[in-house]
Amino acid sequence: MSVIVYTENWDGKFKKSSYELVSYAHAIATELGVETIAVSIGQVADDQLNVLANYGATKVLCAINEKFTVLDNAAYASVIARAAKANNASVVVFANNFTGKAVAPRVAVKLEAGMANSVTALPISFDPFVVPKNISNGKANGKQQINSEIKVISLAQNSFGLKENEGTLTIEAYDAELDDSKFSTQLVEKNTVSGKIILTDAELVVSGGRGMKSPDNWGPIEELASILGAGIACSRPVADEGWRPHSEHVGQTGKVIAPNLYIACGISGAIQHLAGVNSSKVMVAINTDPEAPFFEAADYGILGDVKTVLPQLVEAAKKFKAHQ
Amino acid sequence: MKILVCLSNVPDTTTKIKLSGDKSAVDMTGVQWVINPWDELALTRALDLKEKSGGKIEKITVITVGESYTEPTIRKALAVGADDAVRINMMPTDDYEVASNIAAYLKDNPYEIVLSGIESSDYNGSAVGGMLAEFLKVPSVSSVSFLDIEGEEPILKREIPGGTETVKVPVPFVAIVQKGIALDPRIPAMRGIMMARKKPLTVVEPTGESAKSTFIEFGMPQPKAKVKMIDPENAGELITLLHEEAKII
Image 1 (cartoon, rainbow over the protein chains, first blue to last red):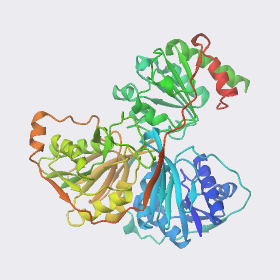
Image 2 (image 1 turned 90 degrees about the vertical axis):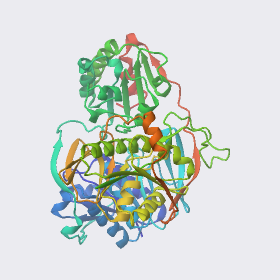
Image 3 (image 1 turned 30 degrees about the vertical axis):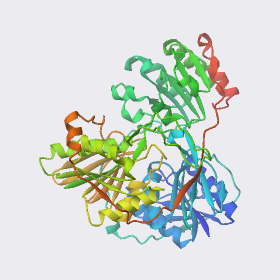
Image 4 (image 1 turned 135 degrees about the horizontal axis):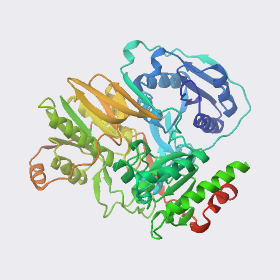
């Protein structure tokens, strides 16, 4: 018996979210009294793989094929489902991120398993198997019971944290026995911005709304973000007006993020916007309108104009960083 | 070429959530039903593609798994331009059941392109599109923000962390779409609403598998502590609080 956890890599490296996921899988495996087995797809160096032991993995299965450089949902799902079957998995854990959303549903069908996505904590009970998750974009929560023999779950990002664990792991090459016909996704072109903080990974996010008045006023947001090491986001009208790229739009129809800190500058806090950010640990609202709904949702509020408030925050952040 | 768009019937985003007395269900009385926002964008793109295809795309069908109360939402999709609709007559319990039943219908009614929104705004499930592709044993592309057809060949862009990838997959396939696929949903005009009444809406009985999971209880989030206001003249105080009190920086 085992808990299988899919540990995604980015150019051969794991991220904090990978370790969070292994920590989570290990906590479930401990409750069930079974082994935590990571599945890694694509080339990852041994020193990276060994780090997974620090979070509770006792074995990592490495599937390598040059075609894995392009995500092919069906091929990836084949590898993970096969590993799950071969190791008699009772639970298969994914991150609720780009790849998890693409692959986990296919794995669930291959394993005839019920699936709960965006789970927010450890199972509430193991028999029956019940997990908590948010519904209606965080306006309510639900307890979902999975009745199939194998359970597939995806963990909401930044919801569990890291739990260190003493141990070692064995690294095994895993032959998924995929022939070329199993791959159907052909990459034509890839456009990535290097050096920029990826919004969905960012632990801190500074975000601007219509209250910023003009695309020319983003200087202080960029400066504050750069000092804090934060990602930059915006509200929907700002993206729709073309003031900022669509990739920065957070909200119901944009990106859903869950950073430790979200600073909303000149964003009123419409329900559609909050739907994308209300899993943030701490939220700050800066707005001139005392009736702005964001003040209801925020932990800290500043009733004032971003024009005068942001430069003060930039100065204070500079001083703070200088003293660290 | 034919395109199928999967529609989920969901409460309007601004709906205030109420729970039933025993917390076993979300109270849906008085709810305003709408097309799930991502599915609506998928439909918009499908209609755009059909209009510019010069007849190559013959038909846009919408499909919903739901009881008869979902029909006004389906009619709205017909009113903005879908050619016909299918309703699988059941109250589905989870994504598995929805996907399995759509797949069962598609076995005898194949489509080249199937579009599904990346998430539903009610139970925040995000698995129907991927599960459907696996049931059908066809390729799937997720987080799709752009879809076009060049000649005979569909071309897609998907949003990856920090950028985009342009990819091709052979038909038939399932595209799971997100923001960017279309900008604004279409608003039905009076003529469209009149025409929608005459468009075919086929009701079929479920032939797929049963659910593998179920919601057993619902709850409301803990009320948040009241916001702590900071003097706008001394805004720098925020940085100190974030460090010392919230311990977040």
